[in-house]
View 1 (cartoon, rainbow, N blue to C red):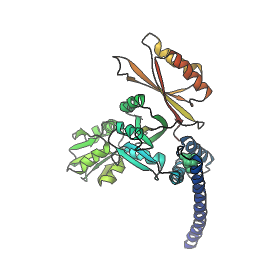
View 2: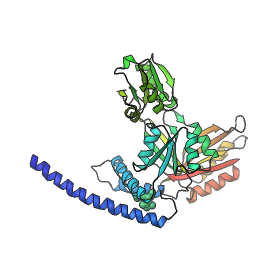
View 3: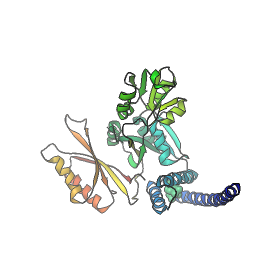
Length: 354
Ligand SMILES: C=C(O[C@@H]1C=C(C(=O)O)C=C[C@H]1O)C(=O)O
């Protein structure tokens, strides 16, 4: 038994030596690529998506596809950091799901910049304090994040990528027992995702809204008989005890985030395009707006409406379509749309989340 263990571990040591040599060889190539890029953008979302897709497709196991994605995300994070540091603004404070999404997408060799609001994320990228920003745009249970949609409409920043984060909510407290909890703090989005559980397990606790779930954890940490609904990372940060895990009503609960920046992303081969548009106010106008996509065989993956804020009962429609704006079918559909819509803005083409 001990002999067998030793033998296997010696094999692992030899593999690690080889991996280390190869990682450094890869890193040196990334450095050379950095010199070739000169002043151009270091981050190439389309290339990173292709690397991840290729590795997941050629994976023979036993590693899972998700495991391979995580490993290569970190490898690329370290290689990219040798070209230049990457600073990403997000909705803080420390311990939010936005922060978790930053590191899931960009890896640990990333400089995260927590900000106070979604507006401040956009501002940090616009004024150069950060290279990119990451903002929540929709949750599978609670729907769209209106502020992000409004800001996308008025900002010059483009969407450079999307991140899907599986959101697991926990109840955390200074107390050891749920029966002691009189107050629960959380962000309205998180309350919305856990209504069923809270009604069943904490029916008499007062629900108090906080500006973020990390802030909810901070408030709960300052009191007795209080709890917060937040991600596990917030419990670690504020040294709270986790009293219940995975309390979200839908186990698949996922938040979609967008990466915004000043860069137009080249096609990766598996892309999405997001746009905002509005119709002139006449019968059948909405139907006409969607016709260019159908007529050119372009699939729509999302349709969302928001009040336009320019007139009562006027709406802006946010649409996601499959493909890159430089793909022939998408380009033709967009050209036809521009002929008939009162307003169209392409918010960006970017790789589908891997
Ligand atoms: C090495 C490059 O720079 C960055 C790092 C990458 C990597 O480590 O594979 C890929 C894309 C870029 O974000 C590159 O552009 O190829």
